[in-house]
Structures are given as structure tokens and as C-alpha cells.
Figure 1: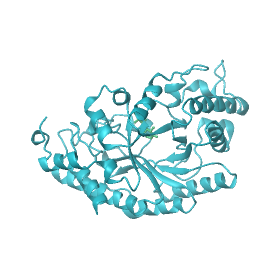
Figure 2: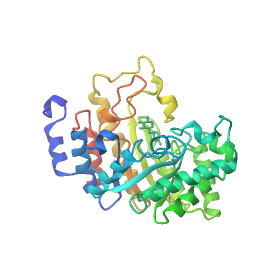
Figure 3: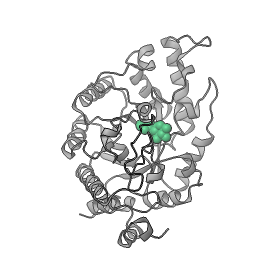
Length: 362
Ligand code: XIL
């Protein structure tokens, strides 16, 4: 498809040919993308070309989640995960692991005995240890960074009443980090969550990180997922969030960046995957493409956020996009056609791409 027919001016494709994201920020932080199976197995040729050219870090969109690698008791399946890690190694990329302990995409059996009754703390602790040891050890020295615990907090900053929490109590978090560290002492270990820009939730996260550090838990960084909106958060909120965590002596990464462009009235108010998976009628505002005005606003949004990231490059380890092209984004759900990334459905750079590159050039 020619640039003209995708509505992208030729000048932009030339910029794309000259400057890449990873080069533009090579002295600042890694630039990552989350990959799906069609990408890390090489099937999606357009995406693979972009990934190799633009990114120096990868995250697995689903391939390392509990239900992918450990679907049944005693049954591990690393077919996809192995290919993901090999893809990263072949291309000299920083390979991220996502995620060890989460309340989603974790099979029910993990929390139940053979009769379907809830297991006790000891059993769950044993299962957690077995899972973390098996997965982390397999990729020891190869997966450089693990999202150890994902989304343990609720919006008011209290600990989420997940099955982990209900059965094990709050030290399930510390335990997960300790097991991961024992399994690979060199790996960077992350606490990862969304909407930490919101004050109440951030307060809860700060409390959690302080507690973990006081206990001597080896936590390297906080991952701000970065599922952003057109009107939320403000650049000032984003900056305050980065500064607040940096103050605790942990690094920060943006781990799942995208900007949801579909108006919030159409039911995209959360990064909660269960809520997001439901279809909402009439939510396909931009199914015929993104209007120029919104395209420009998106570019401004991205430029603003990258300005903040760059200003705090001393604590920002990595900025990872949750996807490569708009076509592959998880935000094309709920009947919405979304345009949240830097490359459009045809893999062509959008004005937001140029805007981000220009931030680096300043
Ligand atoms: C999403 C994937 O992108 C989807 O393919 C999957 O169906 C659901 O999970 N926060 C996270 C990610 O930490 O693991 C989620 O990924 C997006 C929200």
C-alpha cells in the first residue's frame, strides 16, 4: 500500500526510513513493544519488519501468563514462550517476562483442590513457588526483567481481594518477589499496575513498595502500565507519579503504553481486561479511520508524554508500547476500532510517530 493511499504524507515515511524509535532514544531508555504470537513466530511480516527496525525490547502480550505456560496441574507448555524468547535473542533485544502472579488469565485449578474446594495457604504457597521456579529458571539469564506481581491494588489503593490475597494474605506479594529472586538473582523484578497516576491508588502503591523495601524484598522497579486516554492523565500527573516512585529508590518503566482515542463515554474507562472485553454498542466512532484533528491531538499527547519520560530518563528504564500496529492492539475490543499506537493498520508511521521522534531530537 502506498503512503498516499493510507493518508500518511510521504515525508513521514521518509522520516521513518531515516530515524527509528530505538535509535532516537538510545541514550535515554529502551523502546519496547508487546508481541503476539503471529509476531514472534514471524507470521506477521509487516509487524516483524517494524519490530526489528524500531524496538530493542520486547514483552509477551500473553505467551508467559499462567494460563499459557501452566494450563493444568503439573503441565507446563512452553511452546509459544520459547519462540518468544528466541525471537528476542536472535534480534539482540532485551527480553521481558510478563507476568508471574496476577488475578486474571490464571486458571481456577490454581486455587482449588481436586474436589473444587478452595486450597489453604500452604498449598497455594507451594503452587506459587513451583510456578515461579519453573518459569523463571527456564529462562534464567535470558529473560532480563519480570513483572512479578501484576495489578494487586484497587482504585482506592487498598489491596485487591484476589484469590491470592484471600487465601494467602498480603504477604503473597513479598513471597512472589522472593521466589523470583531466588530463581534468578540477576533478573530485574517489577511491581506492575495501571492508573497509578491516580492519587489514591498511587498512595497505596507507595505504601506497598515501602513495606516491601522495609522487609528487604528485592524489587527493582515499578511498571506504570500506561494505558492512557486523550484527556487523562495530565502531563503533570504523569510526572508527579514518576517522581513519587523514583523517590522510593526504585526505577520506573512505562510497560504497556497506548493512548485510547475512542471517547470515554463509549465505555473505555478502565484498563481492567474483564470489563474491556465486553462489547459496547455504538462504540466504533473511528471505524472509518482517525480524523485529522484527532490524529494531530494524538501526536501532541504522545509528544507531551515522551517529553516527561525524557526529562526523567535517569529513572526511566524502558518505554514499552502494548502492541506494534493499531490493527494488533488489544483496544480494538468492545466493538471499538481503535488507533492507540504509533503505527497505523498498514504499519505506516502516524503523525504521533514523528512527534515522538522530534521529542528525542530536541
Ligand atoms: C491483555 C492482552 O493484550 C490481550 O490480548 C488479552 O486478551 C488480555 O490481556 N494489563 C496487562 C496485560 O497487564 O497483560 C493485558 O494484556 C492488558 C492490561
